[in-house]
Amino acid sequence: MTSTPVPRIRPRRLRETPALRRLVSETRLDPAELVLPMFVREGATSPLPIASMPGVVQHTLESLPQAVADAAAAGVGGVMLFGVPEVRDARGSGATDPDGILNVATRIAVEAAAGSLVVQTDLCLDEFTDHGHCGVLDDRGRVDNDATLERYVAMALEQARAGSELLGLSGMMDGQVAAVRDALDAGGHTDTVLMAYSAKYASAFYGPFRDAVESTLEGDRRSYQLDPGNRREGLREALLDIEEGADIVMVKPAGSYLDVLADVAAASDVPVWAYQVSGEYAMIEAAAAHGWIDRKRAVIESVRSIKRAGADAVLTYWAVELAEWIRKGDLA
Ligand code: PBG
Image (cartoon, rainbow, N blue to C red; front, side, top):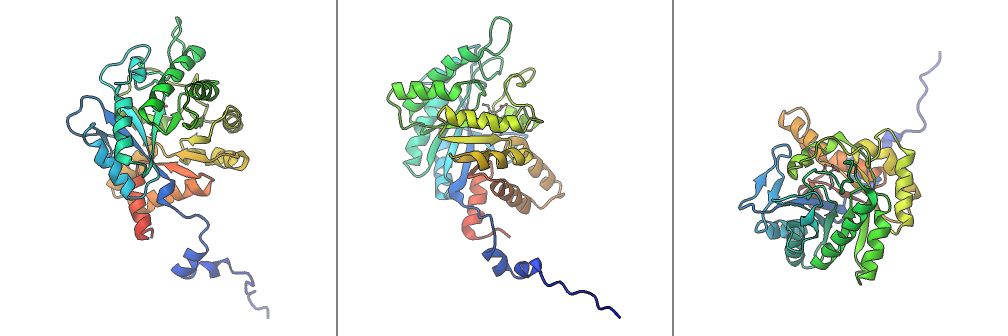
């Protein structure tokens, strides 16, 4: 008679109690590693809900300071500001106007934050152009890389003057990091941090964001954002941005690109961030609203997975709520 073999090695041993599971957890969450993206709407008189992003609003200049203070009080590491202007034109003039919505909002946020978190700004033209592209167009209607760099340089200088501590270069133009770094340094802004959205994919998951910024884009961004099928190219873009002087590189979206994130994290000698984008947020919120998913567990799992894959920090619309759960030790 043969007896059933008894396993000598039992991985389950370490999963037995909550205290053991806590002790051996490989991935911890910290509010300091969360960044809250925020929208500020020019001309708005009260915060405006965004239909496809329940719980997220377009702030007014008046509601912004309290929201920044709330994020700081929750221990969140930073806020990333996006401006929604009232008027747009072909060159995105509002982006380089010191009185443009994003630059005004930056001054207000910096004052409200008072050093308690890092105030960051999106550096891209898409919210400010009437055609909705991330750059200016040539006479054939194509996004003109090098002409766009001149606009980014001017935008960067205004953002730095407004007090932005970290510029998020999200436009996916070739050479944008070097161009902006050179201009900032020449202008005396040697301390302004550059975070490059290095591996930014042409993704359907940006859908709700386009509502949030009232995007006027027709067509798509496939001539400058990465093809979702390309993994090696994501790493290449990140390495190029590091060479050009990026202080931080990013992979975006996060959840569907964890392989790219892991590749970049393994190769990078600068911090690697990931952006859990609007569509990732909307999918979980919508499923939870239907009662099809446990909202809190799904939120925690989604962000934890992004960190597990190698992100040093995560941009997420849940930053404040998640920070509060973390601080209370309420992550079950
Ligand atoms: C471009 C930008 C986009 C997002 C952040 N910066 C939109 C795009 O590239 O189409 C998307 C963020 C999100 O979906 O949450 N300024």
